[in-house]
Length: 238
Image (cartoon, rainbow, N blue to C red):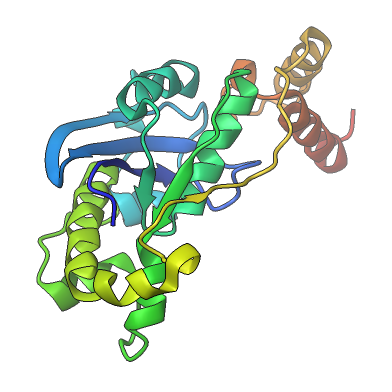
């Protein structure tokens, strides 16, 4: 097993990194099996949160109003991560959102990672669930669930518990050893910002039909703006 890494966890507006947005980032840096640093921030997604996300995370729109956008928060996270291996519970999910942020900002972001969910699925098949909440209950880990930094700290403890119990068994697997980092892959295209023409068309439609929307027009991407315009035209006409 590795002894130095950065555990990253995200809270997001949904499950699709191509459409949904990051609203909170938590990162825990571990050096020689000891926590060396913790870092976290809210992220303004440029849209109102759905009630289900508010209920799940306890995060509300007011907390995000003055938070940095991902264009500011992501470079700060890179400073925390450096070139370290990533750890996560379903690590590819978090990596996919971070990769999307990197591509949009034209920044390189190629990393290897270790997935505690994959380890749990292999060795804890008899548990009712291998979700982070249930695994923390199984190992008696204190856990502030569905908050980024709380999940990241719990995942570090979970990884150490799993390593104590199963890393010697994995050693014989050599290249298949789940405690060894593996390259993370997620392919995504860069989003371009909303065009001036799209902004003008959206503002005109909203003004004409006296509509109040729960997203920031200026922060939409070109594809998002196109989708919003099509939706408004289909519902209200020109």
